[in-house]
Length: 106
Length: 160
Image (tube, rainbow over all chains, first blue to last red; front, side, top):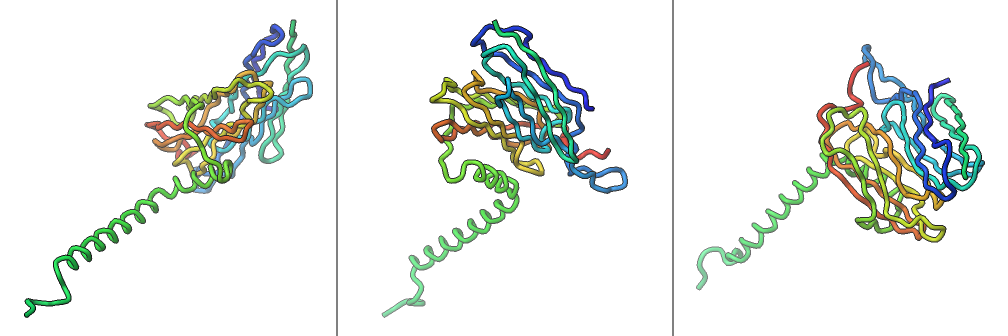
């Protein structure tokens, strides 16, 4: 399982715009590099990131090889109610990772 | 009585000379388009997203450092001026480059629940080049911003 780092404020006021930051460990191999033997290293990237808030999708990103290794994404959402925010990453060679954060809205 | 060649007046000469210069210009232009093939692929990628719609300048703010030491990880932030209400919001933001092996960098989808139309990520740049961010609004219009970036150490080319 790859390492992930999620930053979601634990508490927020209702209606407040909160910033969510996510980071996941992944090489994001572009498919354009050659190894020492001159052979091209096949592409292996995370191609899709989706965030949902209490089951409703709030942010989706299609990633291309031009995204740096260990993809970092930061985005915003309006804190509507307490619950969970789910993050999923999917990519080449059947890569899939999930993470969940809890948020309390008062 | 006629002097010299009646078929070639001074006007004819000037006319043909102009045509020759024009043809040379065309050849030069053709040569330039060959060296900017990657720009063509970027334009094709943009067309794939916006179709035939007009892309307006403005509303979008693309923040990339103007001078990048290491092209392997360049912090990039895109923000769009929008009230982000249910009637008027940013649907999607796409980022393109000119000289990487592929023209696409990232495409994100968001909606009124985002509160603010902005995102931030880290990208790879293979060369000093132009980067373009295009935002698609809920009314179907497209807005863009572009920046030139100078990269000292390029990404994607190093050996393992």
